[in-house]
Image (cartoon, rainbow, N blue to C red; front, side, top):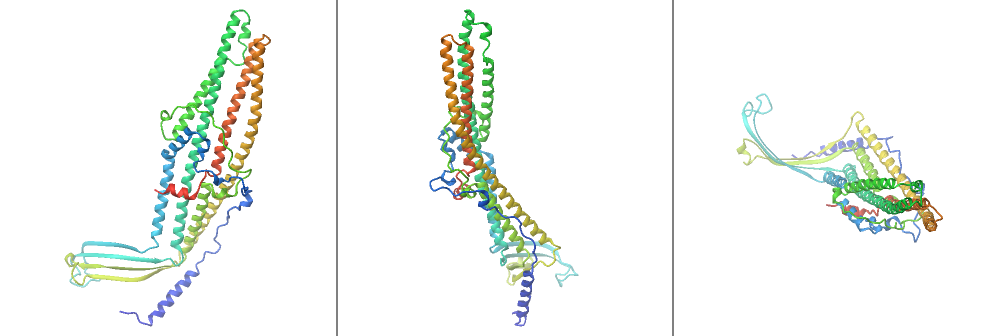
Length: 483
């Protein structure tokens, strides 16, 4: 039956009234209060024309140290560390969720088949002979539905899912960056300990030789027992220091093995030297593009975008849902009648759903989403402040370490000269052996301080590269996250 022409204006008025009710959706007074920080408030600077920027170094930044053993360790860690596998699983989950949400904006269809045996009530709506009888029923049909996204609910949900997916991808890169930095710093700490141990072993050999000479002089009556035992540091103390360094070396090797997800015995035993720290890749100041070069900041910004889209979806809940649905299939009483003529059935029609009274549920939900936006913005701002602090601290440390190294080189050269003079005067009989030992001890102290400064320079450089984002780029991040 076709609808009467008189019914069409009535239906149109009903739809218009419904849309008017939706337009009166009340979410006044509910909005986020936070705002992201402006770069100018953070002291960020545009790179100088000839100064390299944070984007000018490779994502495999650890290769700038020129150590093949370090390259192999970082590669091994990035392939097998469980923390990266966990982050990759979060990316896969976010990508799947994006596909699920995106499917809601298309036509939905499903098939259904039902077979049952039932008794029909004799007091129900069915007339005899069905009333009071037991019959088999069969139903086979296909259902189709589509919802128009007039108010952007599905679009906002998809934007939120995309934001979460992009944040997960950036967080995977942040996990890779943190892991490569941990491996690099642990490796340099291991080299520092090995260098310290080598200095102490050389010193021990020198002391043992001097001790043998001193014993011979004592036995010959040239030196007293007190003179023989008056050295500032005994051999036992040096051996104890070597043993302490050996313990720290074993612990560092164990940490390195854990980061690479291998047994300590699987690590290649090598005695490498501390490499020279490469030149810092930035000018004196925090580069302006820092906010787009750190994967953790990029992830936090995507979290803000996702939370904002979530709030937009919550607003869309105040408006009506308009959809159309239909079905076509077969239905019969008696299974053998399902395929007979006349068992076909179909239907189609629009549907409209509009919230009217919900006891404040939608407003409360919207307030919660607004609070999530504020929380995401606050987390982003805090991370930006932390990033600027980290970069500034490493720049300060690198400048200070460079100055300390210059002073330390002069101090060590002076200690070397004093030892040479003491050795010459001792040979001439003008100084006792204890004076030579004291000069040797002073030189060893300076040698160990030099090693510490070299290691600190390498560590600060690695932390600076991490603070600058480790050569992060969105294109590389997406490529590495794609299975």
